[in-house]
Image (cartoon, one colour):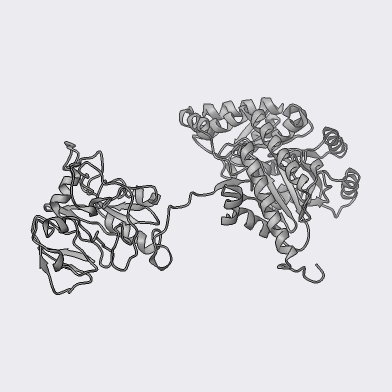
Length: 597
């Protein structure tokens, strides 16, 4: 190791006390101890009997460490002239191919300096600072120079640049003494060297045993199928949000909100609609408006979203008792059983008074199944017969309309109220509407205020929701096609690990039933998310697929606007790869079936 201090230097392999004097014009590079290595050979020694302007001879240096190039050799090489210094061949390299992004952002990779960090077969630049008449290195990891004692470094390959390197202490384009930039007095890049050292300590550039790593691996492609709530607003939505005309919605003065409410009411075929933050709040408002007496009773399916996933708001906030009925596989419940339950409650002084029937369309737990129009008419007739009102949790009602090929109003006409979510398949960041008769919506406004849902300049949200509603049919039809394609693709595989019912795939949700004791849905989700070297070598792509373990033996995948047909195919291949590996492990007996499983 060669370290410079003033006019003296010390060389590894020789006597550390020798302190050979060198000219002031040749400032030796400085860097972290035990990290800075220099090219130890110079052809000028043999021709001129010494290097560093003839002030050293080859005999002055240990056999293991020959002198570095002299300054004239270096300057001639900078000007593109010939020189006799064999060490000048690629002594300093410029390469960013392997530089991690976090180092590039810190700008050491952008400075055209003469310091390098040697990776596996490539070199990375590190920042330098101008020091007197020479250069001071900002720190090296490993050695970028051939023949360095004890490092085993390989010769660097890239040629020396033929122009003077810019001052590494400056950011290119902001003033650089090497480029003639008039803004040459700008602030130098401070803190870059400590930042680089911190990165080296974290092991981002140094591998096991201090060996440098190669290029940073690109992040895997993520296909997120956990839910259609993970969508991000598209560029058009962001523009619409930025340009939205807004006002105080609590005073009814927000033009974007008013327009959205009017449009939603027209699409759903109702007299009026109210914009609220979430579909959960819309459902709770509907329950509170329809069931004015505390202790009233509502009927719904035992797997309904309102019953399982909305924290019992009907009981906690509204004081309403929920009577859960068994769901059929298609998301409906037995109407005979419903009527019998209603009749028993009407004929008893001890039962809560039934006032409301809640439906869910599409039915999430049933795999996005749509409720048939004939079924909706029967429920409506049953409610009229016993004086009950009907509310529909229509978070994905637009999916049902697209799947059935009908207008949304043909579905909503069988209900007294209906909610519609904008932050699922429609892709808006948030928001929902609650629609019904004008008197009902007037009361809903009061309950929204009670629950803290009265927003002010909400037009920025309404603008995104309106754009999603405008493009609903095109977007949702594509989602349904992709979900169907995925389901058919994995159904053809027919592995013993899972089963899938194609008849149940009606919209954008696919339920995969996991067979056997191993792997569990959670284990499958973990393997689908992870990326292995074997997978990359076999498929040529690093793909991370995110699914949701819906129940003890079920996986759920939901398509949305951010998942393309190509993403769908990559997800299918990943599932096929994981299934094959799981079958191989089972065949080898690595996961024996526990007794009684």
